[in-house]
Amino acid sequence: MSKKWEVFVRSFVTNEGYKNVLLGFKNTAYIAVFGFLIGVLIGVWIAIVKAAATQNKVCKGLSKIGDVYVGFFRGTPIVVQLLLIYYVLFPLIGVNIDKLIVAIVTFGLNSGAYVSEIIRSGIASVDVGQKEAGRSLGLSYPSVMLRIVLPQAFKNSLPALGNELIALVKDTSVAGFIAVFDLTQAFNLLGSSSYEFIIPYIMLALFYLVIVIVLTVIIKLVERRLRKSER
Image (tube, rainbow, N blue to C red; front, top):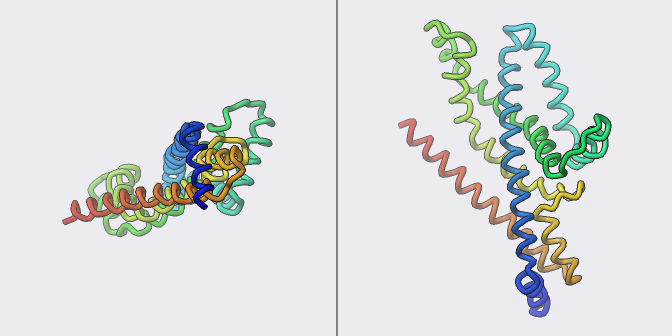
């Protein structure tokens, strides 16, 4: 085993394999962070539309479209979505786009389907009396949603949103299916260069574990701070 470690250290340090790991980590971070932000934007919009579907015919029609979108992205594997968007959708519309951007967009669309259900549950958890009180004060429906409902919905949904971000980070490991050089590809390259895969894959697992632990700690700190603000 010591020889395997020596081979890994030589590949990682002497042969400057750490540069590939840093590049892979940067791409993984881009996909996870920007994909999550896109997912939150899409998810909040869909959740608001679904909440307003009972009061507006236009929103009711848009809600049906949202149901199809959510059903597709929750019902198909992320790998299939990556392949469809990169090899089918963009070529059909004649768009040549960077693989990293494709991965970010795909993960954002996938995350939006899950975030929409998370935010929808958060909106439903807000007491109806608060909505009615806002309307009785003369606030419009959009104002009630933006000023009263959504802030509380986000607070109630924070643990689930944190879990979605963590899941997204782990799911980025499949970005290599469209040749995106992510963290998984970086460690795979380390193994390929020395024909020793045991240590690189162990380190890859530890790398993801550390990322998840750090995110978990940050999410818990934010939750604790929000709880203090309620007192």
